Image 1 (cartoon, rainbow, N blue to C red):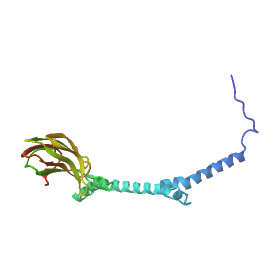
Image 2 (image 1 turned 90 degrees about the vertical axis):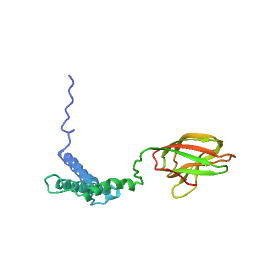
Image 3 (image 1 turned 180 degrees about the horizontal axis):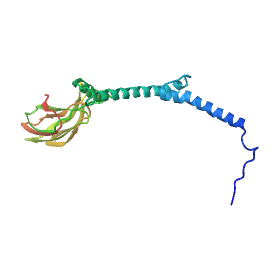
Length: 221
């Protein structure tokens, strides 16, 4: 059986060496505490090193969050049943506002959902007459559509106009066609739809069917 060699007295650290190692460890711990732990946890920075390393800012944020959490805890205790507190309508509205504001600050839009609807629009065009129908949609909004021509063919352009003005963008266009169907996807916030023109010698009737989450479809010219 193998036994480890027992170190001799000469190989063991002396009392002075042990004391020196202990002092070095203690000084190191104090340095770490003063330069790192105190600034990062409590925003206490006597040396200025913590602010240079941006640790003091971290500690200030932690202190602020802790103070806010404590204030909320005290307020919730006061508003518990039997505590004599009562939630007011103003307090409820304030809390709702706190939920909504971050989205507004981040540039996000809060859009109320609209019920899907379906419309069938009949359009009669005399020879050389043109007309345009538009739907207001947010960016990414979609409308299913199908239109057919009775009595001839038409030229058309499916396009969109940015909200607040700007250059129109054409999604699809053709000449002398009797119908089309598909999905209109808005490339930006604005109005989107179709321009039809009858270049034939006889009147035509266009049946335009649309379906999607929009408020209305309207004639704009």
